[in-house]
Image 1 (tube, helix red, strand yellow):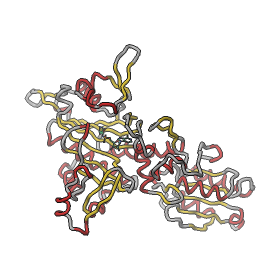
Image 2 (tube, rainbow, N blue to C red):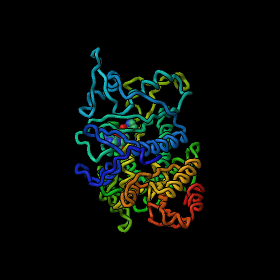
Image 3 (cartoon, helix red, strand yellow):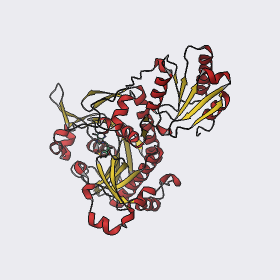
Image 4 (cartoon, rainbow, N blue to C red):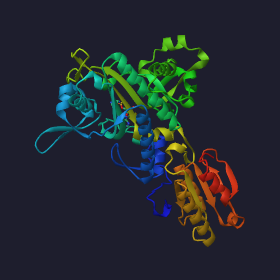
Amino acid sequence: MRLSRFLLPTLKETPAEAQIVSHRLMLRAGMVRQTSAGIYAWLPLGYRVLRKIEQIVREEQDRAGCQELLMPTIQPADLWIESGRYDDYGKEMLRIEDRHERKLLFGPTNEEMITDIFRSATKSYRELPQLLYHIQWKFRDEIRPRFGVMRGREFLMKDSYSFDLSYEAARVSYAKMFASYLRTFARMGLQAIPMEADTGPIGGDLSHEFIVLADTGESGVFCDRQALELDVLDGGIDYDDHAGLEALMTRFTSHYARTDEKHDAERFAADVPADRRYEGRGIEVGQVFYFGTKYSEPMKAAVADADGHPVDVHMGSYGIGVSRLVGAIIEASHDEDGIIWPEPVAPYQVGLINLKSGDADCDRACDDIYQRLNAAGVETLYDDRSERAGAKFADMDLIGLPHQLIVGPRGLKAGMVELKHRATGERDELSLEAAIGRLTGAHVL
Ligand code: P5A
């Protein structure tokens, strides 16, 4: 993409309304624009990151055997009256009436709707287990939307739902989602720590939140420092190995990791040696729930067991805050100059900077590089604007692309260009061919 043609309204000044660094940087980097309180338009740069995150989430759901479908944003109130949650949900639910005076709502979550779909499609225990997910916009009329996309009113969530015949079987589904979450966040370059959690309006008695460490986070974090050293990408995960999944879950939950609500200070102090105690803050990027028959019982979602007797199915639901993750990744990865995107979620891999647009040699060399990078499938944002070099450097650092390829008239005379790594600041003077080779080769530099 040529920057001269790209809608990228970057800001030099820090927007006054933004309290945390990710919100400031998302506004300054022209990624989003607020259209109402807690509701955002995703501009081209921000939308590319959102889609990258969504795709990693999707790949890891598919890998775990979860099936993608798509449910609507607007739901009939009837389903929520059936489950008993229509009144309970309170003012956070955006209630709508259509021209026929039918009661509708903008879905804050989809337990009721998926249970309705399940009960109409399934009759026998032989059809279990079922694991289904969608990636869809949600609306929660939060009393205090803040921190940009981190606590919005409209936000993008991946939500999965599991249906099983028994608690034991449901635990396998829970462990599958648990494992896939560890992989999902690790692939984005995040360390997300699973913590025992309260269940709130979703219900049930088994739940974990996945927390990314950040000082600005809304969740308190208490855990054994050993929890911070686990690496799930070390080995593959076999989703058919139920004992292995249970063992993985045990390994990742045996560190007394708790959010502040459930924190039992005395037990934490007693169980974890003082030098291993970690207390900090973090951002909840996902939460998983097992809630048994909370919805299947009132909504009569039963299947026939082997003897033909109806059994209410055991359910779980599993959420990831896809749009929140954009902010969470920035909180975890930035410096004073701007964002530092981890490669897997970067909107473009390479920023090509023409230091003297309009100079025939520079233009020719940059056009050639740009074409060759595109042909090799390297996503490239080419700054071909006639701006000062300083402004180009500042914008490129701000938007945080992993690699910058800098082309200027002096270097070109000697056939040289400069390659800068955004995360480390390392710079290499290279021949034009060597630079292209590095960027198109292994991709990992
Ligand atoms: C699980 C999936 C649920 O709603 N039902 C379906 C369950 N869980 S949850 O914890 O309430 O939400 C799941 C994730 O969504 C993100 N999230 C938000 N992101 C941005 N703005 C919000 N207002 C917001 N509320 C929730 C969080 O990442 C949460 O873990």
